[in-house]
Image (cartoon, rainbow, N blue to C red; front, top):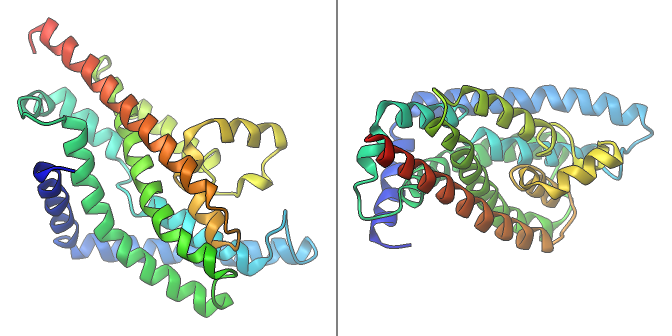
Length: 259
């Protein structure tokens, strides 16, 4: 990461901290999600005999805390915002910078999300600790921290790749709608992949979305599986490359069209 990217990261972090009202709303929303899922999973696991697909209630609640937290910390409509910037010509101006527009924007967004993530970790950790006690496994807990950062980076890179559709269509609302549904289901945000039908879980593992929510949730639920971080790193490289490729094609299109 060069000076420009470090400056962008710092700018994003300051921007995230400069919005206390938005932080409070996001944290409250996150805790409400944990309360609701706590009640739902408590009833479901009791009915299932004490565990479901290898997750007992404490493990499941820690899974939810990490998986939901990784997604809640990101902007809910980043794809739409990127699409608006593409449509309005803001991106065209930014392309004049002597740095990668995708790399610069990713650094800024990661800085902003990192600021939010600290509040999410504290609030979610405190709630879950009071509700079910400490995480099931110390090694898995330690692995969760880098996994959360990689999950956020994968999420942001994927959103940039999806938002690139706005270079060819009027806006990115359809891309945002599709992306959110993929994260909810195939990303493991709503359910661990072990609870999905085997065929659907197999498809999910072939796609990058499970790196954004399932991986940190799996690790924090008591499953210390370091290879998951390697998979995240691999997908992060692929997603950043995909986003850069889409934006490069979009830039060429703007040049041909005279934008």
